[in-house]
Image (cartoon, rainbow, N blue to C red):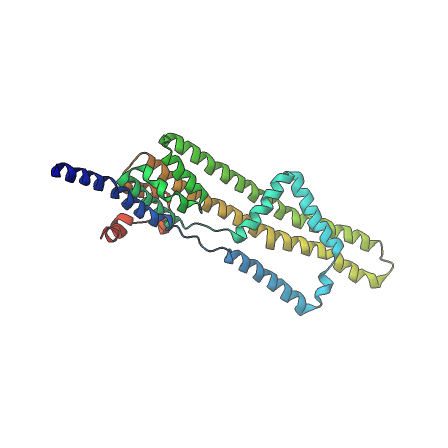
Length: 301
């Protein structure tokens, strides 16, 4: 009976602590992905610096009030919005402006940290099975796509189904962001054209008052303001935002592709070393990881 009791105790001991170790190991990757800040400092600093340079040039050469003309602003802003909406739709334009606002406060995941996160999750799943990843699901809510990926794994979906679902979401998100960037690109092209139209309108009005020579100079200045507004709006505001949305779309697609590769590999119960090679094949050269060559020995020590 003593042997039987010891055997039962051994079986109980072997059954219970094993999931805890992978859970602890997987808890670390749940905290391993670090967000690169909140505000996009580069965009904000760039736009602020461009505005400061223009404002300094205006105030140095004269009064800033001379550059304020509500009708010119109306032509440029209203005309740009109207023509851009005519080129797309109200919904597309609204989404584009939300995307433009989001790039100023977006939180981008570091691809290298994402790759390491995926490797650690794969190691935890390899030790105790994919179902053990349920323990870290609460810690992954900060990254919805990763949370969905791990949820699909723990629910036991086939690897091909997981790959199809996640790849479809990656493509849909990339397409939406690409359309938003296209809307902003179109607006950046329209704004200078609307400025030129406003200038032509002002010149026509100026030519109608040639009988008063004293009014020609101020009228010409007002006519040129619409060109100024259009150039600033198109080249200083809209074009950089469009480029930023495009870059954000590329970074988002890369991160989600890494998560997809990891989820499919974990679902197929592949060797994490092979997963590392798959991830490095997608990562840029400067972001590639060497987890098993550099970090794994220290983690196991």
